[in-house]
Picture (tube, rainbow, N blue to C red):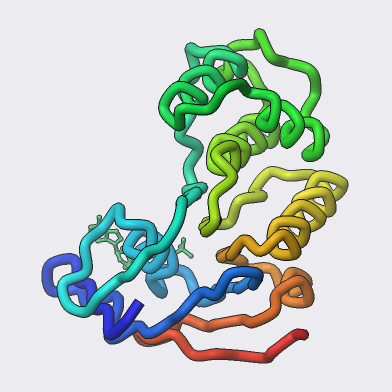
Length: 198
Ligand SMILES: Nc1ncnc2c1ncn2[C@@H]1O[C@H](COP(=O)(O)OP(=O)(O)OP(=O)(O)O)[C@@H](O)[C@H]1O
């Protein structure tokens, strides 16, 4: 992202954001409530167009928004099938492996509206991961995760990074900072690099 500005009406949220996300990096974004982290990610993945500046994207993008994008009336397997078709994947084997890696209970035929919040969030995350994105953008992806799932999530994120994927995660949690290669803080509409962890 080069010199990206984004406003909602008179509210100027991004005020000249510059950031490059390299393959094989795990990058954290912190910032106060309302600082514009979600706006930053939505602009990064192309959901929002910048008012000024440029966003260059390369490869496949996986985006996991803060709110789950699932349909309560469909089952888990129907979601996997829907996204398998949309991505043109041969099967849902990888998605099922990811659900297993996150410790998802066997609930393939259960309506998503009847799942626990944490399990729904696991599905939300897997839907963003199932096309093996080269850039993975996650907006606080583990709200509702128990401690074991939280640990499994970071294990997966590191695996993706080690496989050469670029991973961007918004986090409010201080103890998450240790997992990042680089931490950025969004403040007053600009991204500032914080402590380098590796
Ligand atoms: N669609 C919209 N229309 C108008 N204002 C918006 C819109 N989306 C976000 N905003 C405003 O932009 C600012 C930044 O919001 P954003 O959701 O990007 O912040 P955030 O850092 O992700 O916040 P949080 O930590 O609470 O999730 C807030 O003041 C918010 O009210």
